[in-house]
Image (tube, rainbow, N blue to C red; front, side, top):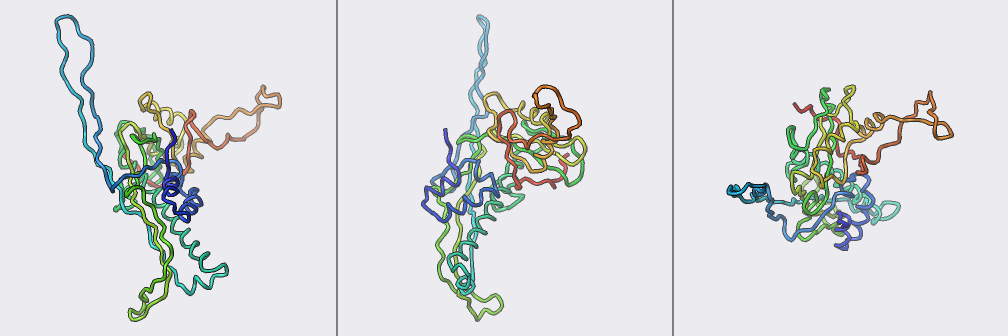
Length: 317
């Protein structure tokens, strides 16, 4: 089943300038391109999550079953106000060599680009990145969580994490409040006070980017993390660590994507053995130091590198 993304929701709103800017800036935050998104009617919703099943098993004649029932937990998923304001001096905009509209779009592009970067960071670091936003996946996967692997690095402030994510309406997705409203308002004339003299005003052109954005993590089996990946020798990302992480996911609930920093991707690349062959494609060729290609997947699961995941985290002990 194809799942909508933030770009799809922007298209549904019919806001053509916003659609173009999102398309242009997806490369700065792949999270926006690959994590699905779905609209909700208000700004939050409640959901019931099953946390346990009733007892089932075999019994012998004239012995009973242990009675039981499912256990459930109520959870609330919230969206938060996300966006920014654009203000440009009208005279400066009009003086641009390509015209006022071109200058306004340059500024709008900058706001949208920064919004993508900030949103990508929020996905992983949550309220550590911005206290006014939603909780991030790292916060939901502290050391000791069920689907976590400690890479064992110890170099201070050089740690990074790799995340395995399962997408879906019952797993990980963005939630966009107010029926998926995402707007880039048309630029309008507005007089703003001079910051150096309150008695003066500056003729300006003003717009704003506005949305309600949250992150749903539907259950504990849809996210996993490798942490304490560092610059220490032997403590970078390897296929063995990825195999260990995937082994913790339940059968039938394997992740749809793996996100990592560019450094982790490089560590994985150089850790993979390479066999160079002669032209006949059979006999090994010696003396060639060529490394393998940039990793694009692990066991068929796509790998996405993102600058939103840092390489300067503290060691988790």
